[in-house]
Length: 82
Image (cartoon, rainbow, N blue to C red; front, side, top):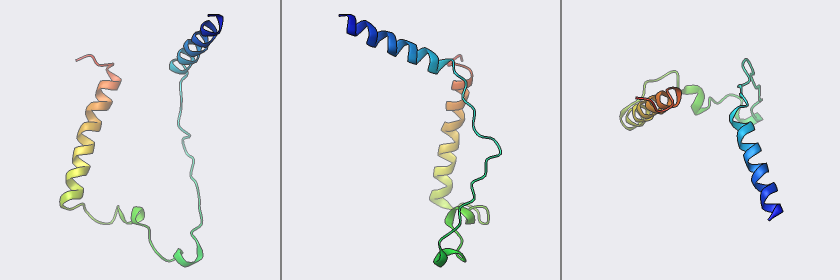
């Protein structure tokens, strides 16, 4: 029985410390990774994304994700109060 109390105490302490511990992203961190020799001249798909507009299916999924992400973040910041 005593072991269960210690486990419960540990879980509660960990949960409370995780909830009230602010986390911050590393602002201004830029990771420079060199491309392998055969791919130095090629442009990655992620690097091309700013050059062209989305078409058809890609635009649909981008708008769908953005739409639900907006509501998710809205509910997260207002703590579900509507």
